[in-house]
Length: 123
Image 1 (cartoon, helix red, strand yellow):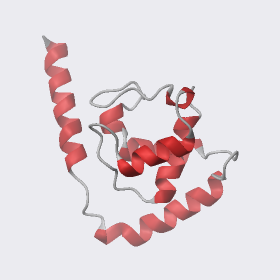
Image 2 (cartoon, rainbow, N blue to C red; image 1 turned 30 degrees about the horizontal axis):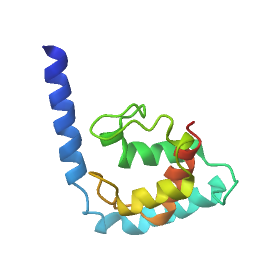
Image 3 (spheres, rainbow, N blue to C red; image 1 turned 180 degrees about the vertical axis):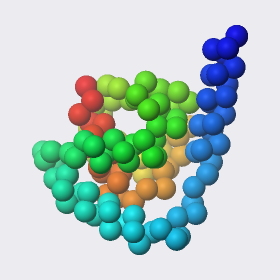
Image 4 (cartoon, rainbow, N blue to C red; image 1 turned 60 degrees about the vertical axis):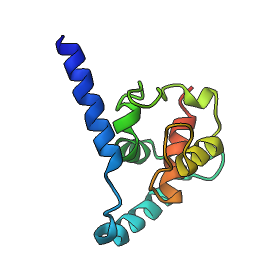
């Protein structure tokens, strides 16, 4: 009984968190600079290494509410082995355009590329 209640509350929290956002006007200058620095330090060009810590932080901030903090799924599907089925470019496209029940995400291209590079390594 506790498990079901916890699951319902957890799912409700994810849905509400996913519906939020958009109020980034006050911090857009700072976050843009940080994303650029993170991308430059991560070597995100194809075949380059990904800054795993920064990519995981971006995932936790933008994706974990639906896909689970441990990539195990939740409202959205598990992503713990998504790299076995999809390339980094495929994942970027899904982040930017959405797919199925997943809406397009409000993240800049650099953040999407960073998250996708990190997820593409999950095989």
